[in-house]
Amino acid sequence: MLVGLEIVQQANGNSPLPLQTAVLRWLPFAVGNIPGISNLGFFVMLGSLILIFVDDYRRSVSDFVAQTYVVRKPRVS
Image 1 (cartoon, rainbow, N blue to C red):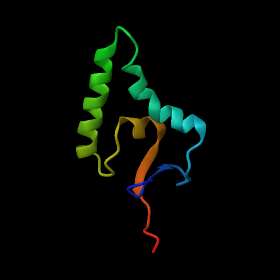
Image 2: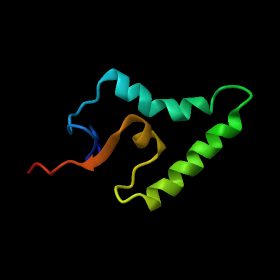
Image 3: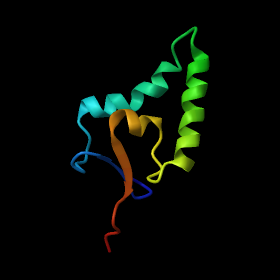
Image 4: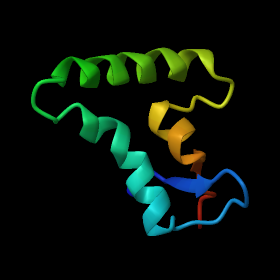
């Protein structure tokens, strides 16, 4: 919010996100904190980094899982 970005749902553009969608955005990175499979967190971060540069809308793994976009809010003067 401080930098003018907002997360919206892919299907309808609504914001703020419902709890279920917010949890889905958080889930890929939470998997990396499970003991014993910490390498998976590295691959999620690496995949996100690659997707940001490859995807036309610069979506990360968490955006694909939760079907969301990060958009710039219009400036209010």
